Image (cartoon, rainbow, N blue to C red; front, side):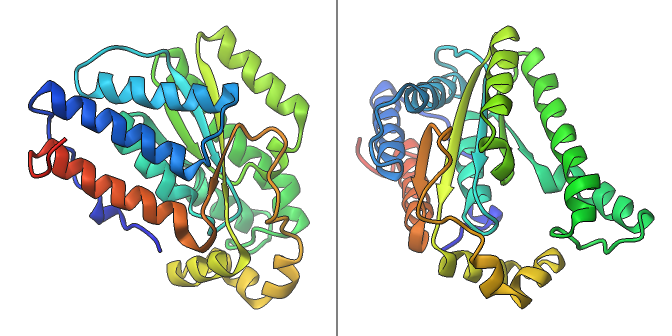
Length: 258
């Protein structure tokens, strides 16, 4: 199950403290549900950051700027979960493909490649590193201005590299910010359904070679550096956040008792 961008309306303003408190509890409950109630420091950073930003978004409290990586395989549900977090917090949503896709396609063509290539050595060696560099530098620009960001991208190789993760945490700390890492876990069948539904030309190779492609995916585990795991197998997590979003709107609009 996926959530379209049009299905996420602007949040109404809370009318009284009881609705504020009910909204806070709903957000906390939903995040604990979709992450399996983790209790590590990274999970607490994300939860506290989201609740604090939600309160600030509603004119209550303040929070330290946070850089949140929402990672996972293509079709796992990262974009939907990133939008949910962005709507709750008001944090800037930075999607790798939105930021870099036109440039990536033009660069691949200029190098004699296919604009929809996302699997050959040409793309992996010459183009992919530049994509991530653009994404990260944009996030750091936001962080230096005190603006929290949500980064939606696979981050497969990056999260597997402890040195990359350590450098990220150190750079954010030097800029006065926190880091939260979310891994959206999903099963291969659900990912294929999502990839087919979005009908994107860049997914053509994956669909034509699905068995071989799926064989390279480690869907049963998550990167050791992931702080929070959102279990979206069979679309479960995205269904939960969609239900929470609808209930939240009803609470804040006064249509549902706290």
